[in-house]
Image 1: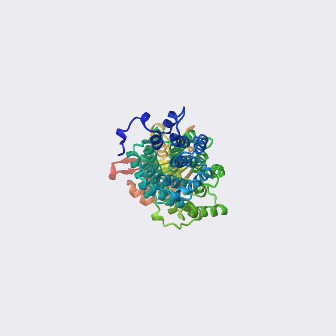
Image 2 (image 1 turned 60 degrees about the vertical axis):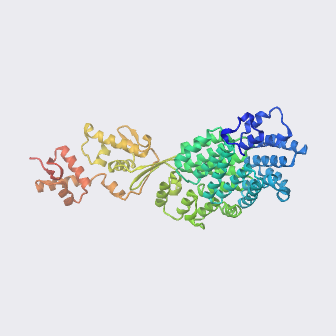
Image 3 (image 1 turned 90 degrees about the horizontal axis):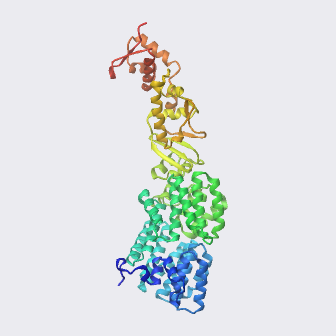
Length: 579
């Protein structure tokens, strides 16, 4: 009977095999620092390889082979070495070791068959040959079940889950990961369970399944957990960086990239470098444009060394966000999509070509589905879709423009963008919007703004400045940052280079009604003199002015003493003072 985690002995009393299965690699290496028996060699090799110390792991494996070890122990040690090499990006070396296990796939059963099949499946997975990886992983799972080997079942389920997710069967993959996590927890492998839980959360984050803010919080908590492995912590920070960038949180994306680099980029870990460079390219494309992104992608491609899994990640960013559409690149992407079966390879190609061969409603990848749905649609509709989906960082992509400092006004929202930071606020009241449109023409003095926005012709600082100051404060709040409106001399301005885009239905009305027609004052006074006494509604209809413009003129003329106001509400009447 399997001992429950609550009843299991302390770490110091557990076997080395249990510790390496549980992911406690540091404890294994600490206990064997002064030497170990041949029976413990597979555990030591596993701890070295899976903690990134590949050179030591290979030396220990060579010495172990020379001592003619037991066959099951050799198969297990070989698998651990293969796993470490795959995680570090050394798939060519891993494949050479995996070839040595081929006879055991055909000629053995039980645990030895599992280790051999799982090793071959792992190499194929990291190579990006997902169909072959699935076949070997299924054979590994069958061998684990036949041998009543729970830890092996956990590994096989984990690998099958990853293959399913990359193939586009995301929900099925998450179910398999959940089964693997439950099994690991039941066996007392708490670190493995934490790693599997993190993998599931990372996939939810990448494909936007569940509530993003809650998932991000859980992933961040796991990156601080001692139970999470070196490789998983690195991947979590890289995934967080991409997620922050896609959600318009450029500053958090940069911090996550730095956290990933400080943890992951050892000299031998080329895979970590490639994945970091791809994430850096994505963040750069959304914050600074295609140029900086292409530099990182070029370096990543040189390091990827024909690893198809990495090539699909590079191609996705290259085609969708770095806007590289050379014929040879498109041809290579088409080959990758066929060879790997990776759904995102197909999505990237469809977006680049401007048409989709996938049935979009069945695509489980939320971001991929969004990209496909935007094909052929106008920028205004694309922006609306990315905002509704929460992918605010995709704003420049949706606009089909380089990242910049811009403000977009829609019927109900005010969207601001600056260096990868995108904020969406409800559209402010009309005077605040008029203030924004007035400032887009350049510096405006306080007197000019009061005249253009509120129609106040006679500037009285003590009376009118509070209105202007309130509107400026509300505009800064709506834009999400005080620096959007600069106080200068006796007026205000927007920062240099700000682009203002308006999709608000009454944009022309806004611009036109910011100030009344030049002759409106004179015509209004003439009309009131002719009528003797009248109301604002009659004035607006007679002079063909909007109600708001009429009221602004009446307030201004009343404040100047040119008109007298009597009554209140609907009974308000205006007349000229006696001469």
